Length: 132
Image 1 (cartoon, one colour):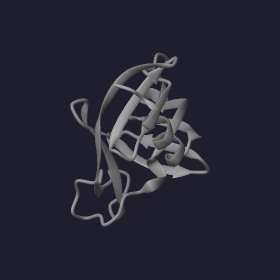
Image 2 (cartoon, one colour):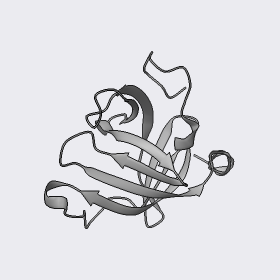
Image 3 (cartoon, one colour):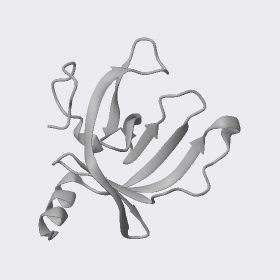
Image 4 (cartoon, one colour):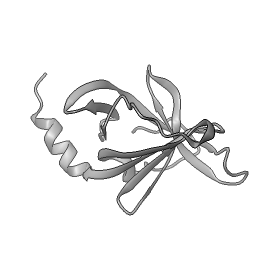
């Protein structure tokens, strides 16, 4: 299970799958990020995160979900994505209408928006075919 926090009883399955980056916004002054280091990501059910740029694997690491308070709300708990050996918290996420929104949990942070390109089941099938 990809969840480290004792506050959560189940994994938010909506995160698992393949995602294509469609927008980055926010930051100081609202300037868009013009040179992303990836254009597609995968969160697989074996708790692996993979980032791709133009079809080439750029990063691979374990990931975990930690449930805690968001800076955007004093009452709501959200899942934060922790990517092992990369950054302690990537951000909180929500999934709505086949889009993944990852928000930096800092003021003047970025929001990454992704479109779903593969379901969890499809990703698991594809990764079983990979050879190492």
